[in-house]
Amino acid sequence: MRGMSGIDPIPGHALGSPAYRRMQLALVCAGIACFAQLYSPQGILQLISADLGIGPEQAALTVSAATAGLALAVMPWSFVGDRLGRRPAMILAVIAATVLALAAAWSPSFPLLLVLRLLEGVALGGVPALAMAYLSEEVDARSRAVAAGWFVAGTTLGGLSGRVLATPVADVLGWRAGMTAVVMLAVLAAAGFVALAPRERRFVPRRRASGGAVPGGGAGRLLAPLRDPGLLALLACAFLLMGGFVAVYNYLAFHLSGPPYLLPASLIGLMFLAYLGGTASSPLAGRLASRHGRLPVMLGAMTVMLIGLLLTLAAPRPVLILGLVLMTAGFFGAHSVASGWAGTRAPGARSQATGLYNLAYYAGSSVLGWALGFVLAGAGWGGVVAAVGAAVVLAGLVSAALLRDEDRPVASAGSA
Image (cartoon, rainbow, N blue to C red; front, side, top):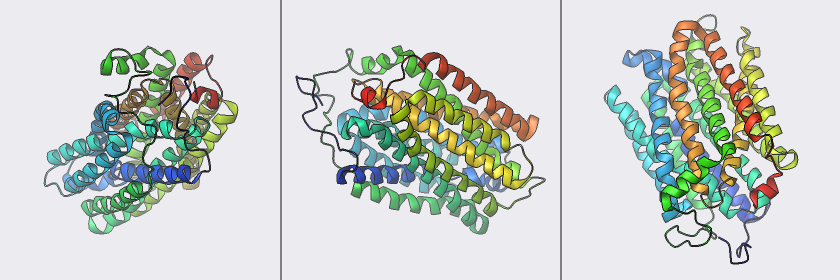
């Protein structure tokens, strides 16, 4: 919210302030509540496949259905957030998703499971759709890249905790109990978000906003960001990188449960500890971007992702684990920079810009995360690695071509 002079009448939360720390912790809780549930089936797809008598690509639909629902919902949630406020809308989203997640875990049929997972994804869409807009408005401009990194770190913790918790429980009590255990974790994280998230001070409901609005109402706010070639490059990166990343983790369990590894679900679940690489790299990427510019950091992170991906072709388990750590760290580093960058590119339509980013991000998860199951069936793990590697290279080329001439220091970009 800006006054006539263009200066924010209410300052954003400064880096290191008590309110900023509360926001950091609240966004970590939001990331856990959302992403623990979203990807809880991923580490137990082979158990779902065996129990329901379906193939790997069908089992992967339990993940893709949720991410497809999320992709479809991020734009509607951005408009809800413009009316209700980011924080209230995120609270509503997490509560609805938790109820649907519990119902999905105990659905009596596979088609109903997919429907409930789709609806769960629709509800979860409110968290990533609004988190970046929430922090962009409420924190000081110089702190946005670091704050964005902390939210992404929360998403890695959520993805990790959901998978690591679900797999050992599922190994003993079945996949439904494994998913239920994740729901209980999400309840605790959601409570943490509600208790910690600072109330909005700079939010102006769109129906009353007058200054700086994008002409054309909702349609104008949606279309305006699409005229920006740089944002289109970030959307392409979101689709390609996320799609490839999810495909690797979707089919990792099938790769490790077969020869030469023959690992049980509980040990496969430990492989998801590689997510800690992303937990560390997300805030680090934000800090590096604030010092050296976003594009060099993003391209460097993609390079790390590609190197790690290639290492997963190695047969020795320690090398494969190292590859997973590097691939995960590189992916989340690139995503941390790109997602925060997208949120700063449309000052009059921040929710819509971040919504479009998340639409591309989860569309990639749904489409590539499912379609590469056919590559696994036809060409094995090597085929999956080749396809994902091509996606990473393409994302890097698009970024270098369309973002090379406009990378600026984060502080000035955020305050523009």
